Amino acid sequence: MAVVGDSNSTGHLGDIDTGIAAKTAWIAQVGTDDIEYAGGWARDGATSALMASQVQPVPDADVVVIMAGTNDLAAGLTLEQLDDDITSIVSTVGAKNVVLAAIPPITLRADYAVEANADLEALAAKNGWFFHDGWGNLRTADGVWSTQYKVDGIHTTKAGYGVFGRDMGEFIRQTFLEE
Image: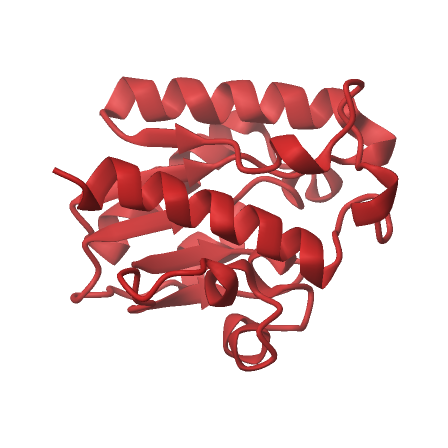
């Protein structure tokens, strides 16, 4: 599996390799040996445009999980730009299966997270990809972080990334590995 994303993919530790080494990145916490990280690109603060410009092909990836859009609002990028960037990322990575991960709760702009996730879900449906929201157990009914998982309103704790990682791992397993 390839991963492309921002700080919520790195475990808020700079880059994906550092997050994996520290076992804070969600991919390091999927809780199973049948899902293997094949590569990708993730950096703290990354917009979808930066992801699209930096990601490289990951020839060994059967699945790519893309978590993009969280930082686009602050950078002034539109949802149309997000869609174009994700399409570019998918093309570059080259995995046959695509999962668009929901962006996490954003305490100060819960409405943006709802809007962006609706856009991501529609983009996935339009292209025959998958959309998965692994943040459900980490947010309240009003769309913000549950207190036990909130760090700063955009990021979660190592335990929170673990909850997301195990949820995403189960989704990947059920969708692509079980026959």
